[in-house]
Length: 160
Image (cartoon, rainbow, N blue to C red; front, side):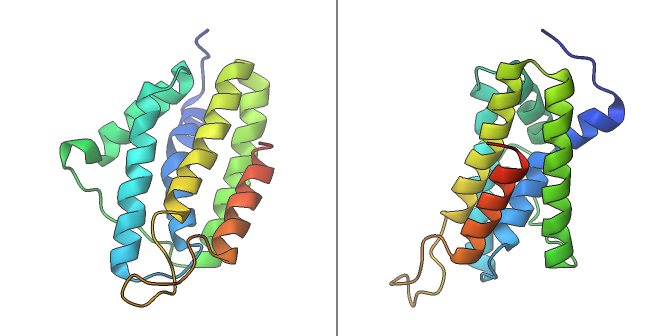
């Protein structure tokens, strides 16, 4: 079933995956190499949505890839960071809650569930993309408390 979303609603649904990637990447301050690794993994996870069984996830993922470039084709989108990390992360969580309410109101329940699960999957991919705090690749944490907190807050906002 195709749902007719307003431009603003569609913009929310299409903008949120990359915003989630940014927030997940910035949940923990990492070096530029780790951040690039997180972006590569995150954009791949977004692109993977094109193979979803959900038509909503397929359409959103295809639009994000069309706008940002296909990492699988060797196109590297620029790494984006929030000017104010805490405010940016809070805004993403607010928009995730708005998307959840929109999906409840308009989307097919299976599409809504798939979209919410996909965003958490993108987050999981990003926060586990590289270890933090190790030396020369040894030690450190795979997922830090700050990253786990963002992931849990996102899941709560999306009611996953």
